Length: 286
Image 1 (tube, rainbow, N blue to C red):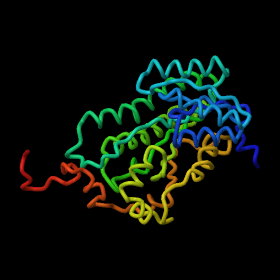
Image 2: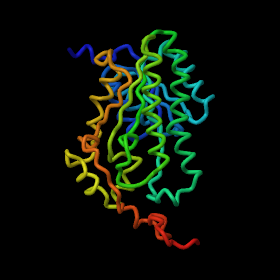
Image 3: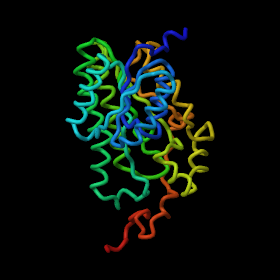
Image 4: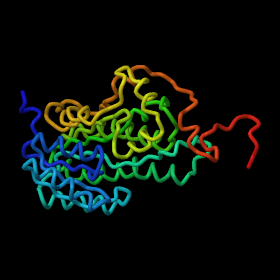
């Protein structure tokens, strides 16, 4: 049974592989037997990932890549192919958010655009560039990292660019899965809940929102790194060979509740200039 989860002899690219969930994904795939290509904008931090992967007896190639630059992404795929002769797994993990907690009516449009460019357009660049190799070799597993925030408007606070981009990731995942399944390329998505990740740690710890977030989950906690190991290996391996177009929540039952949350949000009190406070009828113009 273990053999269907094995990734021995496989090559996996992980974007955003220099910290946080990207390191967890790379480590899990290496433990299952895959050689790893870790890509990120932070070249220095990639060396820590390289040491970790090589300590497991796997090869690790590190490459600087900004996913919002399509030429960077093409170079990533080309270099991987030249080095390993295959691209078996692509984990599209690179992403950003906005932890300021501003209400949508106060958001600057530049932040919205920047988030969508990274989380959705950059992810498309990666899917498109990888498909040139995967479709020609007749196999491949693309795992897009979505979010429960792409499944509905029930978060603990507003980040419109993140919601929009992750919802787009989910729909793009299903569209590509439908188009490429008959040529051996599977496309799925993981939709994690809130995790105490490196990207979100400071904001969650300092704001005091953890009890609220944990209480909204039927499991009464947020995600832990080990919760993602099984799902990522499952979707990367032959254990899921007939699974494509799936958006898999890893969320302790949160999306099962379908629970709306109109606020007030804890983040409403963060900004001293009032950009966490809602505009209501009668609010004066500045």
